[in-house]
Structures are given as structure tokens and as C-alpha cells.
Image 1 (tube, rainbow, N blue to C red):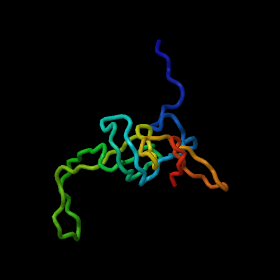
Image 2: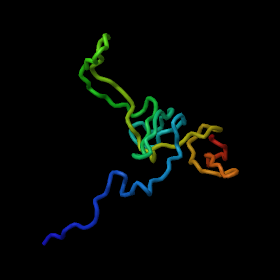
Image 3: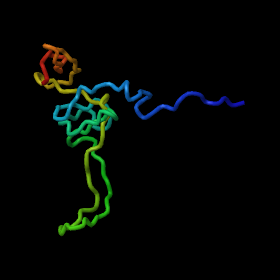
Image 4: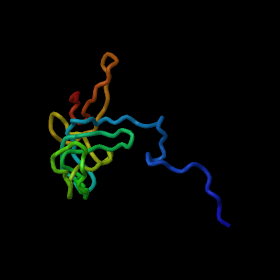
Length: 130
């Protein structure tokens, strides 16, 4: 006989609840290098960060194509854009590493506190990031 499944199903966050979500150490504007995936070895600037999904968008990397139909916007006289539009796709935060501001090599990020205020620090060189 088949056993009935018990327990809650895993969510898209890998089983973590919203309360146990970790904070991301990469912010928009940072320079990162992709460590895994089709764009491995390439680097770019972070455009947008989605902490809830643990994903970020890097300028010019993980380009995806969207086939869109021209839309008429009320009140707009210009031609509506349609066709194949290329834009950046999301990359999971575990697949990128921050580039060290000193040497430009990928580094892990630590957090140090000074007078109670947290600062991000490059683990490789010890340089302060912000």
C-alpha cells in the first residue's frame, strides 16, 4: 500500500520560511562575476536585486528573449514597439561572487561592525566595500 505524504510542501525559497530568510550581501551597483551557469567567468554591474527570491540581474548577462506583440497605448502617438526584445534574466545569488575593489578578483563578503554600524568587507583583501 502507498503511504500518505505528511508535512507541508516545500516552497520556492528552498524550504525556508519568510522569517528565516537570509540577508543578501550583494547590492545593486556592485561589480560581480558569474561563477556557474552559461555566463561563467563573465562580470558586470548588478542592476537589480530581489531578496525575496535570492536573485539578481547583472548588466548584459543571462540575456533572455521575449517575443512581444505591439501594444497600443492610449494617448501615445508614437509607434508601439514589438518583436523580439532582449533583456537581462535573473541569476541566483549563489552563482555570483563580488569582485574585490582592490584586486578585482572574486571574493567572499563579510560584515564587520564599527560603532554599531555594519560595513561590508572583502574577505580576500580585507578592504571595506562601502
